[in-house]
Image (cartoon, rainbow, N blue to C red):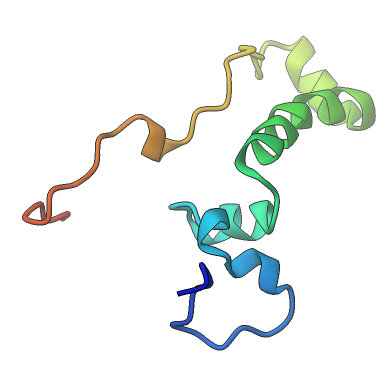
Length: 92
């Protein structure tokens, strides 16, 4: 096997379909990540706060009224907080 996912027809951007690029993710996150390495994507998500502060006055206004609180917490993905599922574990 050459490290490529072969269970689907790949149309365009084949780099997105390398096994090394696959992470457990919901559809919006999967589309956002695309072919970025995980750490690049993590930094990009963290940098969204800077973008909101720089380019979105309504965000700054909501923050000034205490409706939004920036935590500065690191970006941690859900799968990083749980252990691997056993083959006998059933999700409900």
